[in-house]
Image (cartoon, rainbow, N blue to C red; front, side, top):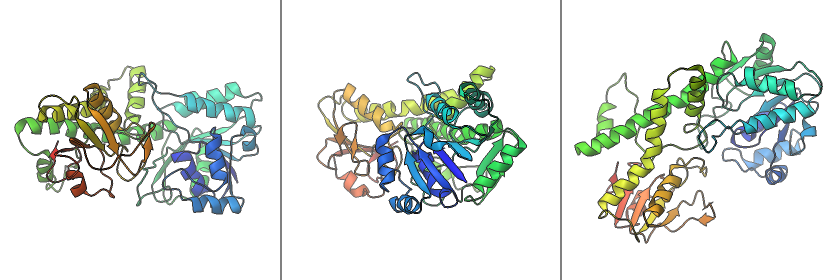
Amino acid sequence: MKVSIIGQGYVGLTISAFAAAKHDVVGFDNSQKVVDQLNKGISHIEGVESEVITKWAKEGRYRATTNGADIKGSDIVVIAVPTPLTKDRKPDMSYIEAACKTIAENIDRPVLVINESTSFPGTVRNFIKPLIEKLSVEKIEHLYAISPERVDPGRGDYNQKNTPRLYAGLTPEASEKTREFYSSFCDQLVEVSSPEVAESAKLFENTFRQVNIALVNEFAQIAHKLGISVHETLEAANTKPYGFMKFTPSAGVGGHCIPVDPTYLAHVAEQLGAPSTFIERANEVNLEMPVYIVDRVEADNGGSLKGKSVLVVGVAYKPNVADVRETPAEIVIEELRKRGAVVAWHDDVVGTWQGETSSPLSGADISIVVTLHSVVKPADVLASAPYVFDSTGKVKGAKTL
């Protein structure tokens, strides 16, 4: 089958690499730079090796394009575009809108349209389908389905093949064709009764993590006031063999899912008049953590950071990836600079970020660990400054949450 995948980022390129083993894949992206790299066999996404892209391209199983006309003749079109938040932290549907426009303008026969982009319940039924129908010149009866992505960048044990995949179609035929497509390269498929169930399940998975991370971050603040170690307390609680799941405190949350997905769920709850108090408070707690950390560091250093050199260690949102989307390090750095600190950062995995490059792991008055990559030795972090605050709890001898 010819499969066109709109969006060649973390989700789209990953699914392209797996699907090309069984299908002829067209990867559509608006970035000419990304497309040029991919057509040279150069992957820009961690977890997708350049050798894989080169192999499929040479065999004629994959090509990237910025030309919407290249998706003509597809049997399946997969939407795999970002669904970020606007500046006022509302769902930004502009990327899905653009994908629908590309489909409507270029698909001239019935196809299966699958949404992999994370969005609020009702997106397939009440947003994607009506928008494509509205924008299409010819009235075509497409099939519509959802199979929400579950990509976890940097993870080695689970991938597109062995992670159970949820799916549901608007019709039984759409569900069956979706099953046929994903079963060609996925080990386990889980059909649910409606797209709304699949959309809600994806949002709840990450809302669950957001809420529990917020809970442990709030508890870390209580433990500090109590004068006890939050990490020792959590290890003690974790000895219970049932009814407890350990989460660890951090500088906040980042990435493409946890800071974003709960807001999409809260958005639809607001529209329905349903409460989302827990979700909203969890967002607040995690957004406040970077400032709380700076407050702690300032209090430990004479009540002022003005003129002090501060090194932020790790600006990626999680260990062992170069992804800086929604990273709490950004708020930490902004807050430090507001208070007059001279700020640099060290992260050789990221390398370059916001026009700055990674600084040496040494020579600062204060070091603050936001993310600790496995290539960074805790002993080197401890030696990088006279005062070290570690939000990860992995640098022994440092101040911690």
